[in-house]
Length: 284
Image (cartoon, rainbow, N blue to C red):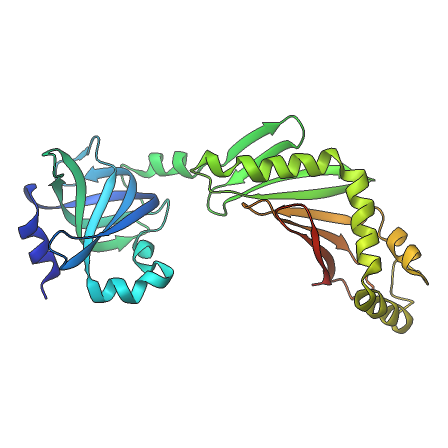
């Protein structure tokens, strides 16, 4: 099936095929065509540059293309069709400007991707600005830096003579996803003294974990930085050894502790669900 030929017959375009640079954005959608012969995929574009006309295409911020229903079914489980374009990457494509059903130029129909990770284009400055980190000065958490490629705010918080790394997972382009994990991180920091004590007690109360730590301590006592003979002493030995908090977008989080080399340098983690309940302590 000539997918591109069918698609072009089904839609209206301006001009002929041309070459474009596109700076891909984040997010997209899929839908079945009206004749149900194929699926239509869309992806956001930060900017589109018409190479032949030597100018930026104004107002159009969406790329679109068709895939067969068979391809859609094969790729739908993990949304592979959205991976054709990577967020923040510049591509050289062959395509046409396409009209919407309302008669307005609204899409860049992408017939073929010619190059990926293109540099030295008129979109380079837009790409640099688009990928620049976001800096957030928070009254509770301090300075947080969001690396867009990782989707993580990162900062530090000083507690008991130790710098704790704060990781907060978000979708950087959707501020609605920032609210919950930031609120969880703030609440944690505001109650860090009591939370730290509760986490350490929870770790020490895990019989399997405590027994494993005690066994390792007996085998490698000279190498260990901490020493204990009871769960209470184990909990106390972990004081001041918190390393990080990783807050997931849904509000669940993990606290990591330095093991004092009891487990050979592995971390001791506590997992907390989105309701604030401790659900697991483990060496990782």
